[in-house]
Length: 160
Image (tube, rainbow, N blue to C red):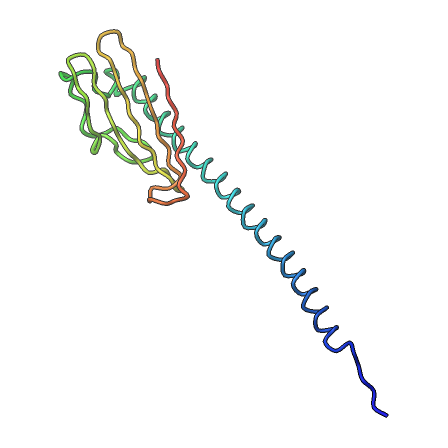
């Protein structure tokens, strides 16, 4: 007498189903982990960018208020002549590479860039008005000096 089994392949089907469920759970957990890492990285980059902007703003405020002994080092009009060296931020002479743009007889904007120790860089715009003594300072902090899809920028603005 021969036995016939009518449940052939039942265990195989059950094991494929259980493997599929475990795989789906694993992929879900991996996806959550990757998104958490990206979020943490963005938070870290945001902090670097903020500190870079703060460093640029503090450097500009220092040199504008304390100057080089004769007042602000930044251009105030098309007639002013800012120094070409000796102005340091983060151990870099910014006066060697700064540009004076948008000059008029009563205003001028000085732009400079410097790298932050430990990563990041900052670009600072100092707009001074000769008549009235108003200053608008804008510091753009970047989490990385290299172009990247994950690069974060923070901006601080100060007017006085």
